Image 1 (cartoon, one colour):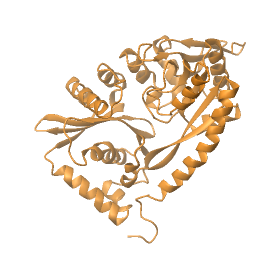
Image 2 (cartoon, helix red, strand yellow):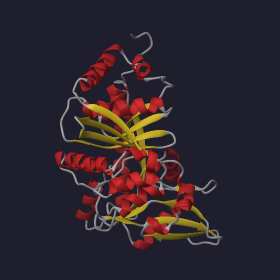
Image 3 (cartoon, rainbow, N blue to C red):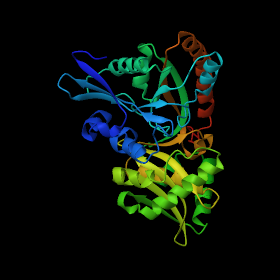
Image 4 (tube, rainbow, N blue to C red):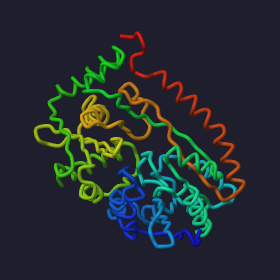
Length: 381
């Protein structure tokens, strides 16, 4: 979309764009920060070899100032995205089309909602949407996908003709609780007793629990956490997207925004849960362990995150994708958003029909899940 006003460029490395310029557009969500994205690239986690070739979008004004940008990747597969389009790819390729490569505007390996079309004040979403469409055409990609974007972006993209998709996660909202007991008091009696029993079981397990932040996290912690991460990947038959080098780089670049919930037995690491701290939320990301301890996963990933949020006045905790078990621990269903632009008219129409049927099913499921809320209803003990 080169014009007298704005000039479009694509960058095969986040390092080509100065951190201060990128972050001036990105805001306070740590996952779209220059630091996080550079850690993913420098560690070899997002690269051509892993099927995540950076193609970051930049828009500059006539004076050369960066006014908008987007974390974008040429993808040769659909793994590590958490908004699944494998069926779309299979149908298109069975019909003789070529679905890959595609352009993915996302945070690699991180199903974390937040801004994806990063802009300075006054720059419309439409400017980046137009730039992405131009890039898709120039690169001869089948499609462009913007996943886990904000509702504002999603609505603007829908107005620009992009296909709109929704999904479900589970988030905890801080209702001004003074401490964890105050939070427990907001739950129904049965749920309150369940969480107390779970926490008591962990407390009596002989483990030492810690919350580590920033410089408190040492190379030894990261080495153990990488082992935990690989254990989780192996147990779930997944792919280890994040390399061993990623963790210490993350700690170095993001400092106190890294919060690690930690468990040890007699000084030996047993389990850990990684979180990143943003301006409005604590974002839970990765978990793993060497030893299976009843309820330890719930304690480190969900309940200690609530403890931390209350103590630091944080508005919500977002604990990642999937997991209806989170509801009874105070995490309620929240809608997520993605937008999709597909070059082939026939495929685009087919996906649009699919989404028309998918959306009411998801909305119905969200309504059902909301009825499982553990919070006390009016008049309930």
